[in-house]
Length: 360
Image (cartoon, rainbow, N blue to C red; front, side, top):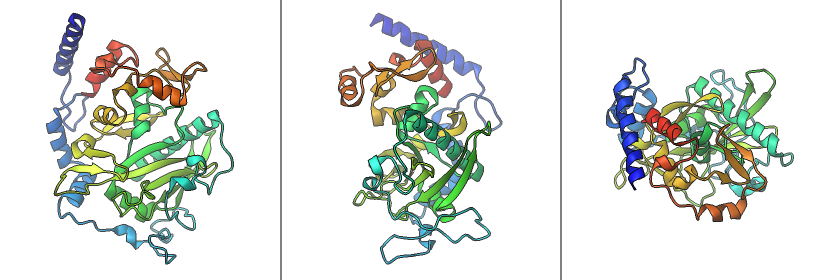
């Protein structure tokens, strides 16, 4: 107990010194941090996307379903094609959109069956996911599409700014109005990607679910709103939108269609960072979001799914003796939940103090 008090005192001292040494962020540069309420107020005044989001969902409460401008191609409800390939949107398009994203239609649950040609091995999967998320982040930044990494992908960022090597797909989120925009403008478009060294050339399909206008879970067949798909093998990034669906009873509470809920101030203002070497954005309260979804054990466990955390290289390395599958879950359930972040062992005590001070 005495040691704990000493450590907390040290954290408080370092925090005070750090706060006095940095310049508050004021829109003209600087690496300091404003208090959270002030930062949120500035965000409401400045970013155009954020202002539109708040007006769209918190103002007149009406959802103008622009996605219904898609051209119907079937009597089946919700089955629509992409917008016409007009001069305004000259990107190459596929012929028809996927009527839904039921995971049962994806072979092994992690491939789009339209592009599946065989299960990829460990190295090919990591290579696919790495370049796929880089392509997504670079493309959305170029097109001015506001998106942020989420779920297990956000957890991978927390550890080392990279994907978790046992993941089979990746997750990103966006506001529901942004989702509607990409459905109207980019549905079924194909996007070329070339790596920085010019050695990797890939192509990706952005497929938007025609049921994006439905912001409740329904029968659970359309909880994924869109996908960014590698057309070589069918691996993909899941894209989900979040919206305020109960403004009267739960104002400013946003949710996707798979029971994940967030307060608007937990998402915005987004934080700038890098992921897999590409500029990226993460939610404002990334730590609270991760703990709510995975519990704080996810920030502590250093052996999982056949991998072990390397504190020197700060990477997850394959380890034949590390638990995997149900055994990994069973063992992690016996690990005590840490009471504070100073218990996290991702890189040592002072390293984690630095991370906390940097973000707060």
